[in-house]
Picture 1 (cartoon, rainbow, N blue to C red):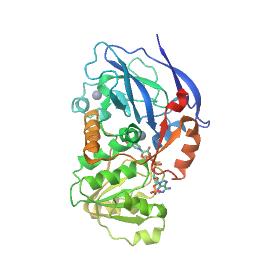
Picture 2: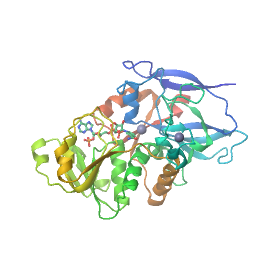
Picture 3: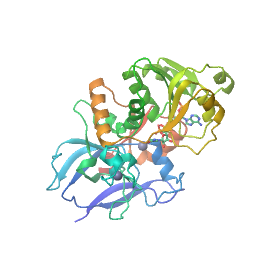
Picture 4: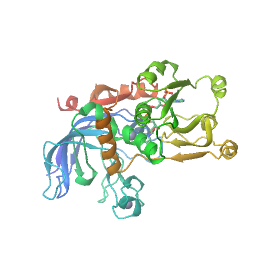
Length: 348
Ligand code: NAP
Ligand code: ZN
Ligand code: ZN
């Protein structure tokens, strides 16, 4: 019997999210049924809901920062039991046979991992995300929320957390690395917390001068306002590593210019393409990289790192019914620093 599930869905690129109902599959042998307590609101949800990347499918139930409790498990489930606090991030499946999958980097699966929403299950059916009251997921794509992390403030770790943790780790950020975090939003504020916890000298580069006090309270050693192009140009090239989390089109070259010899900028923000000049890269052997979320094993490592270091997200909890207004506020950079939906509002 399919499980009738309350949700919020978007039906076209130009219409708001509205109440909807969907059927989750009955948990199979290896499946876990999770009651969703909270779901974070990622800027990717907006890009997808509004078809900004051109491959959105409707109806769409966004949401890939999911936390809740296990309600029921299939007969072959060994990892989870009812009552466990668990999370689900941006993926719910992958081929599991290719090199990246075997290496625990399912996000780079050669055949493409199955996104939590706007993805296709192996049987071809469309996936629906966390703006809903329950979800059924294969046990291998579920992670444990460590004791001591509150569920609401942990929710955004499932995307904003892992997306910033993974490149900092992968590219070897360590004590003394001079890190700049570009954009202080959901991803950016987690980037600051992780870079500091890894011992880096951490600077926020933000186009919102009003965020300076917050940046420092989050642990940043320094703050650079980027809105005034002329003043920004004057800053010397002093970053070993820039983590660019900006969601809107902007001049990448202005940031490349702030990297030292052999410095690297990692793009995790996904705005429209912007032109990249060769000279500033060549003249100082600088690099530009991209990074996509993180694998399941690394997501668990990140959650355990958060528990060990007392790291959670700064959140504003909202009811499901406030989602459209929340999107508008995010587009105005008016969120400190992640909206998290309390799914009890949808059950009431
Ligand atoms: P967010 O909370 O809305 O934060 C984005 C930040 O970008 C804003 O807070 C703002 O920071 C800055 N910004 C916005 N407009 C700007 C502009 N016109 N010029 C300069 N800076 C601007 O978004 P998010 O959820 O952190 O997501 C950020 C981006 O990462 C999105 O594009 C999202 O799709 C992408 N993403 C990628 C991955 C991945 O795996 N690579 C995973 C998740 C999300 P300031 O006010 O400080 O300037
Ligand atoms: Zn996300
Ligand atoms: Zn694979």
